[in-house]
Length: 255
Image (cartoon, rainbow, N blue to C red; front, side, top):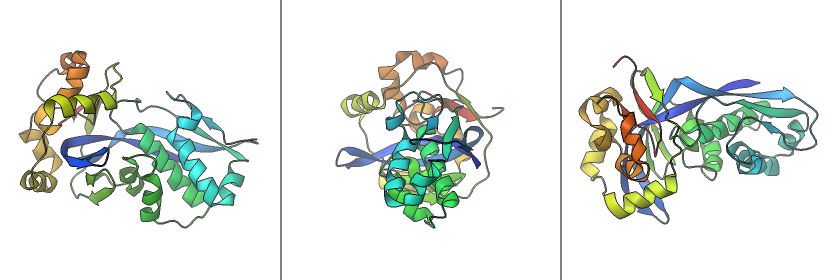
C-alpha cells in the first residue's frame, strides 16, 4: 500500500490564550498539494517494527513509531502485519520547518493501518488517538484541503474554498519551536480578540493573504526572527508568508 503524506501551511496563526502548558490557537491550515512524502508498506520479514526513511530523529521518537506503539497494543493484527511488512517513507517535506511533516506522516500511517488491518475506526476515533501524539495530527487525519483549527489543535472544522496553488521555500534554518514560544511569551505576547478570530475564520485564505502582512498573519513570525535573525533576509517581497513556527515561507504561486 502506498499513500501520499501532504505538507501544510498556516494561512494565519494567532494565539488565543493558554491552557495548562499549551497555547490555544486560532489558525487556518491548508494542505500543500505539490509537497508530500510518500509512505509505503513493503513486504519484508521483520523481527521488530521496521521504519526506513531519512529522519532527523531516532526511530522511537518518530511519530509513526509512536502511532504503531499505540495501535499495536490495542490490536494484535497490527503487530502481526508489521512482522511481514516494513514501513518506508520517501522524505521530501523538510523537517523542523513549520510544514507539519511529522504529524502528516503519523496521520497517514494511521489511516493506512486502519484500512489494511480493517480496524473500522472512524476519523473521530483516529483523531482521539492522534491528538495524544501531536497537536497537528488531527488536521491531517481529516484529510481536508482547508480547515479552521482551534483549541490546541484538536478542533478541526472544514473550510470550503478553492484549492490554492502554494509555493513553499524553506531556508537551511531549523527553528526551535520551544525557544520561539518563549520569545513570544517574553517579548511579543498578545491574544486575538473573539471578534477578530471570528472575522479571520470566516474569510477566504486568498483574502486573508491579500489583507495581512507577514507579521500580522502569524504571531510567531517576529519571535522566530528574534531567535533566528537570518530569517529576515529571506523575505524577498511582501508576498511571502510564514508557516507555523518556521522556518518555511510560502506564497501563492505566480504572485
